[in-house]
Image (tube, helix red, strand yellow):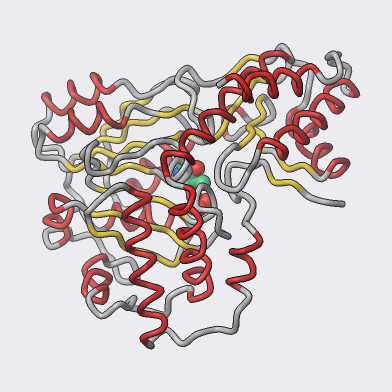
Length: 377
Ligand SMILES: *Cc1c(COP(=O)(O)O)cnc(C)c1O
């Protein structure tokens, strides 16, 4: 059976990228690798819209999140976590693992982070060192107003650390213009690669904290990584084949243009929202992202079972809910190499499974709504 991935990570990988990665392995202490490495860093700066330094880590996105805790902090630091879902809460879990108890500004799952609340807490606590938050909260399909949060945090001494793991190259992110000090991302979402690489951009304000931080770090020490960038290397063996794939994926992104990628994600997002509404489903996000859409299922439908049926009977992978939304929602991604025809296949199968579960929808309704909307944007 042909399989279609509509999950918000991993996302499908283009054939060009897969073939590039199938080439025989290179040694990493060579000029040949050095050139790929430099091109990748330049390409990442374009995708991040930054002139800041960008580092690449061999880890999943969470590894770069952890690295963005240990490289800036001391155990007695005061930091803020502004969250509105599962991934925002991950910042708190990582900080606690290192003995830091953050000031938590939590919003309901489905709501967005209110920048005014961050501003208030920063005023009350001028000694705050860092504000951790999320660009696109993949668990609920919310996109946060990082532009406004960036203005608020820039007026304080704190650095702004943003989890842009699912958002990068899908939802708009202007790292420099929005004053994001540290933007974390990963390979397996908008960048159209397999899992395994993670990225971090560092502003001068963030770089200043590297020396004063005292939490334990070794593999994830940004100081070592920055040093080896000068010789076009990584401190330890890089994930060579993933770099080769990244080089190819970044070339594809450049060729298409970031603005066009953002626009296509936005078009698909609007059309998916209309399609799900046409099925009578309620959307989860009050400030919906362009890379993923989450919708509540009718109460008598078991989300876990529905996701499994779609995968086993139709070869379509969508995501269910996480944490407190487990079993209650579905999430469809529209980023990276996902195209409208993949989504049409997903919607068609979803309609069938809903009908078979006793929730009657008029066959084809979401497909025609999707097509009408995407052609009218
Ligand atoms: C996928 C994702 C992560 C986690 O990344 P891993 O690669 O699974 O470690 C973190 N934050 C957000 C917002 C994500 O979507």
